[in-house]
Image (tube, rainbow, N blue to C red; front, top):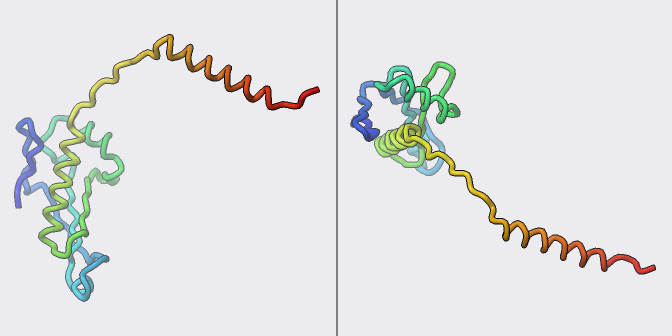
Length: 138
């Protein structure tokens, strides 16, 4: 196959990836019953050639995909061929790791302008007045 390139000079060798195949459901006719086309790619997060901070970042952002043993899993079964599912799973794993390692942009605080607040309050008062006029007249 190929090594994973996560940008910024980070390359994960294919030797760290483990591939597990199984029979998958979905389209494929008789092929579904005979051939193991579903592919699961597994990689041990602790074995990745990354710094401890980067590993923590991955564990935090991909915690739903990492099991108790610290193995990150990605599965693909959308294609009818095992090779295509393998490529899709590896590509998806590469995308997930790349996204997990990109730093989040800090949120800039914004203020609601005074005029906008005033307009909102005026509109609420008008609406309340309209509803009050719908009441019973004594």
